[in-house]
Each structure stands twice: as structure tokens, then as C-alpha cells.
Image (tube, rainbow, N blue to C red; front, side, top):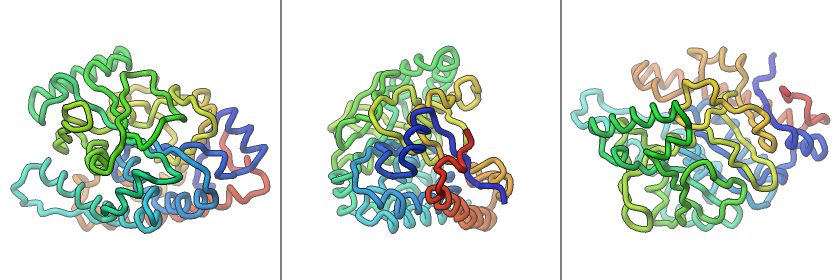
Length: 353
């Protein structure tokens, strides 16, 4: 069988892995991308990483996540990471609603997202995440500026179209419509965000749920999160608008970054998805290790892809649950492949480059 994982890494990462092997102490940070339902496509890989690989060490790590990446990392920083992650995955998979529900789409999805977080985000868990002795949490959000600070109306639509157009000219121009706000439980060492106007807000227990919800709030699908206290006032949107897969030109700190990803493409921002020239090369990923399902693996999944949020419209609930459960079950192959790779006598045996 073809190896189901693709591993991409830069020159420095290759040097350290060849020298030391797959030691968790090599990794100073973990990155989690936006992706919604895509977390189900690497469900068992996450479980192995959180409960087995990273649990072998007690060294400090920074957790950088946008959207579902921040939710996954909140599970990792919980008192029982394995249980929290399983609750997150199960609740996300089990979302259903009455097609005849008269509420607005924003009300329905906002309610479902709160329900998903309720599966593991207790008062005890919140305090543990914020004050974790090992994991330092960084939750990426995008604060709307001008029209992008509106509720879901035609003026917000105009603001988003304007942001997409200016981003097409230059990614830097995206900051005309959004400010990167990072909710951080401590200093950021692995990344120095120099590409946009960025503000780090101290992550408190009272802000954690709002920060997680904001980080996943897709305009016109959700209502956004309005914040006034402890933060710059305004409406906060999905962190993936600026940091969809992250821009690794901002990586500055010592140590390697571990990046369990949903595919082999590193796309900096949400508006860059259809701009192939914005995709980042391994030259930028000098100290990053990307682990993702291989193209061959993806081709064998139902529909030839891992789950995504558009599946809510593609299938009825029963079809979607069947397809998503199949993807979760099959992701056990990814966990087994990673286990095989890190225990192999040659650390580079399964590395693509």
C-alpha cells in the first residue's frame, strides 16, 4: 500500500530530524490551520499526536491556531486531551438541525458552534487552558475595520469584496479591512507577526470562549463576535481571513514547528485560496515539518476528499454522517503511518523531499 502521509520540511528541519530522529523536544510550536470539518479527516492522527507523541515530553510548546485549529489546540491544552479531542470531534461530526427551522442561518450555526464547544469547555477546562504549565495558547482572529466591522448586511458584503480586490493587488493591503488580534496566554516566541498590524491581547478565562468562537466565525455563515472589554472594540471574525494556513515568513523563534495539516498546500490567507502564486514553498518552511494526507490517500476517500463544511449542503444528514464516519475511521491509517515513520531507524525514510 502507498504510504498515506506526505511529509514536507525545510532544510533546517531536515538537519535536526536526521541528527536526532523524531523527538518531540525538537518542536517548539504546533500550528493548526482553518478548515472546519476537515479536522475529521485527520481525527486519529490528532489523537496519536496529542495522546502519544507529544505526551512523551514535558517541554514547553506554543500553540498557534486559527478557526478549527484553535479549537483542536484548546482540546490539547485541556486536563484530559484525549477525552477533550474526542468530544470535540464527536460533537462536530454529530451536528444536525431541522431543515424547517425558521431561525436565521447565523443563529443556527452560532448555536451549533456553542454546542460543540460545550462538549469539553467547562470552567475547569477554561482555567487549565489559560494557565497551562506547558502549552502557551495563541488564538488568531481578524477584527473588522470599517465596513468589515458591520453585521451581516450588504455593507459588510461590500467590505469583503473590497478586501478581496485589494488583497489581489498585494496581501499587505488586507490590513485596510482587518486587524490581526491574537489572544495569547503568554509571549509569542515562535512567530513574530510583522506582515500586518497585529495586537496580542492577554488571554483570560472570561475571553477564551469568545476568542474561540470569533476565530471560527465565517462572515454570513455566523454572526461574528462583538467585544468591548479587555480588547479593542469591534466585531471579530474568522482568524483564517488573515491566517488561513499561516504565513511562515513570520516564523522567527528557535526550534521547529510541527504542522499536522489537511493537504499539501500552504495558503497564507482566506482570500489567497484561488491565487496559486501565493502558496508557500518549502524554502519558507525552513524549520517547519508539515504532515498531511497524501494525494493517493485522499483519492480513496468518499468523494475523493476529506470532509469540509460544504458537505452540509451536498448531502442530507444521514449521507453526511456516513461519509464523515468513514473518513474518521480511515484516518486510523494516518496515525499508524506516523507511528511507523517516527519509529523507523531512518528518520527520513518516508519524507517526500
